[in-house]
Amino acid sequence: MDHASTDELTPQREFDYVLPRETTRFWLLFCIAGTLMFGYKFCTNDRGLIINDMIPFTPFGATIFYGLCAAGFAFTFGFRLQLLYRRRRIVIADESLQFPKAWWSSATRTVRYQDIRSVRVASVSSAVDGGRLLTMLHKSGTETFAEGLFTSPAEFDELLHLLAQGVTKHGDPDALWNLPVPQGEDSEHQ
Image (cartoon, one colour):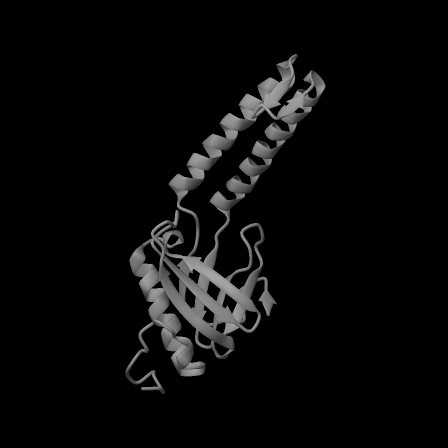
């Protein structure tokens, strides 16, 4: 089920889910530098190019190559710029979870707790964004959320706790593979 807004949800808690601003700023500067460098080469090229001693280009082919590289960096700059200003969030509601559908879209996806088949948390030491990944298998597919895209590890832990509560209350508690099953008055499965 896809929705453009959260109007029909009663949010219990919202979490910002964005790339860290420092990371985005670094990529913006990197893309500006790449666009300027390849743009300059595109405008002033009068020589051929050989890539890895295997792919030769004539002066015209090299100029086209430099233009495509400049365009690629410029496109990446635009994509990264919209990530800096778009608010992406995960909404935990009473009976469902809502999250961004894709990085390039403002659309969201809503998954009811009863449709969640499994939830796992794995520590990934090689993850660029952070140390843990939440993987959720539901009726419509699989979603993965990285701890590093939350504003703090405490928010990631809070999301795990609220998700475990929702799945325990409205869904299948056996879906919580390596999450602690919440105990108490909200829990029907003890």
